[in-house]
Length: 198
Image (cartoon, rainbow, N blue to C red; front, top):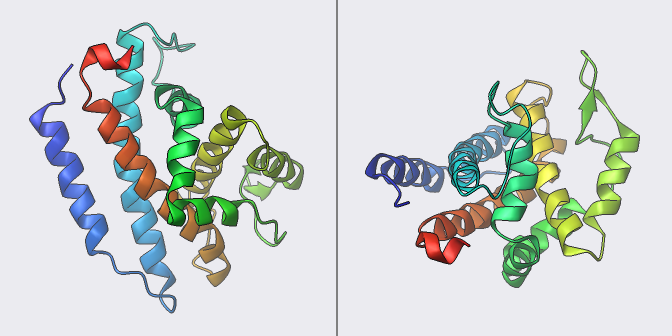
């Protein structure tokens, strides 16, 4: 199904906005702004990819009649849509996104990715399990872990649990780099004719 003019204009507009945000190490807000902007693009792309897979019956989301499966779409369906091994090869063939994924694999132990409870407390055990998946030799597991890392930061930032603190640069920088490349991969795949998607 061809992408609508409205969809393409949305992507162009937000991409242009992201490109205008200049990152400054002394201004943490620029990193939050760029992350938010890239995630808006990512969100629109993974929603479209999910609907395309849903129409093609490639996926059958649970509770789909009740609500859009946002978490599954961002963390699992993207890996399926891009074919996880192909996605990881593409990300790791580009030096900046490869370095960003390597940065995600570092464990400094002073910030959290995944949180729990009403106080959004860090979940160290969940973070360590995520780290193991990021370091896995299996491309499907690694792909989903990269996507889970980004989604975890999205949940923390969008829901207000990540403060404007310099330590956040260590998680925002790699997410920004990976999303910049990931968004391009998603858009390219979405533009392919339906026959190429099967």
